[in-house]
Image (cartoon, rainbow, N blue to C red):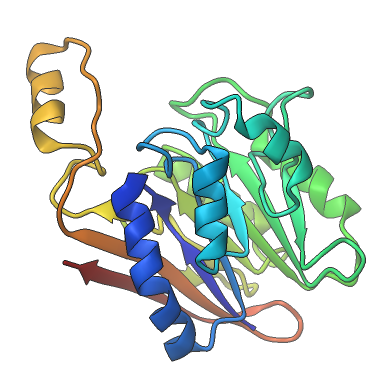
Length: 259
């Protein structure tokens, strides 16, 4: 199976990058399954139902979340009812949605996508390591391809989760920091890993936000209204090939600049 993991989609520019780049990437690499982190797709912070549908219509099979998943209350019902949306599994009980989704469905599952959020330099949540253990213990034995989006700030926490899940999942893909790292590899038990897959969003920006806004914030320490930058976009993703046992056989970073 050929899998494409797309980095954080940031605002309208990021959605445009997905719309323009994804069809060609799917054709060129014969992609079977696509997931993307969508927690910044609506205005740069959060995910609303309209933008969720837009990304799914572009060819994304599953949308994962993160610390901005619950910004818009309109998405709560979608998280509960749409089987193609997943939010971090280690949010406390009572949060809308689910922490793992099965594709194409629960009757004939081929792929499981687990979403976890880190605790280092992030909001206090439940333990991602224990949440992963609990989910894996309950998954159908028929599922060979298991993908984990780790939405976390600290490189060390992402790497630790990668090693913790090594050999138990197909891939551990880091999101949240928006800068694509060059450490993609296959761990010794067959799990693909990257610390951060990057973003789909404005190239000439600071993590997708207008440069002047961020500079003013750093220089003055005063509150600033963030605005997604305009102009050129980057499409960032990770291609994972895996065998019938769900073990990764190759990984390749993808970065496409779109004028």
